[in-house]
Image (tube, rainbow, N blue to C red; front, side, top):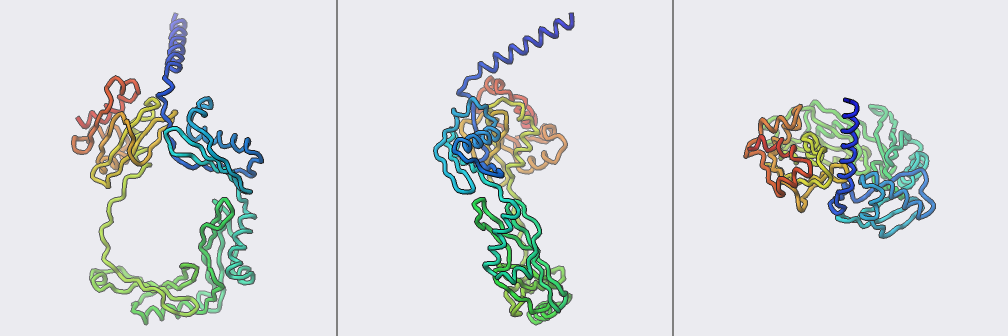
Length: 379
């Protein structure tokens, strides 16, 4: 008898789920994209436009969570372009900014180092490059080197990390390397003595640094500043050119001002919302989260195709708005149970809940339990 009842219940549940699924109105689905640019990195890019479109479609479906059958409803291909290293596909997206998908050819280590090596050689010359640059690693489109300069003075050998970053189009988009074939003729002892002559007091230390493509000795007073140091704006650091011995920069103690509290970040709101159970609501649920006693941060939270998307800014037609005090957000995130913390500590001053839809619709969307978790403490 028990088995029969269990089977009947299972059948009823399955039938109910089918009725529920096929009864969802198509126009209630909400698509919200987290990004307006997606990048796919492949060993080789597709030869044909059709293959590139296929790769882009797969990436979009994985990123958005939409079913394949709904793709054309939301995404319309507007333009495609190809270079030797990438495809660029631009889509118009319903209810979202245009989406650009880049299908790019991976930069392997030898190719990347070849481009970076040439970039440095063009500035400093082949002989200088071979004498002072050692390849280390190539990762995230960045060629990493160790710059080594050996000379007779103390400390005998200087080592500095340097790097060149490449774009997917193989251009150099960033660098931290010497930009001229600079010779190091000033010793650390000489640099420290120059520091003393420019107002620094013992004990002093010196270390090489790379600033703007030039190597300097950074001479620092090993000292804990006092109020008098701040009042007098005492010099505590000088940068000395490693070739000429010129003092190129002086740093003074300046009374620090109290730094403003950091803004609440998207990741923190995402974590809090997930801990409160937003994952259990239905697709199409929308919440506006505004932070009080902070910098006026505002976030929109949307359940879209099984995923929770949190973005900075406001959203139209939100189901409810949560006004949360900055401190209660941070403390709730630190607690073992964010919902319990809010229930115990929320007041009408630090948590405000504004309903914009009726209770029936909120219940239908499946997140009345989320509302109760917060409202219970704020009541």
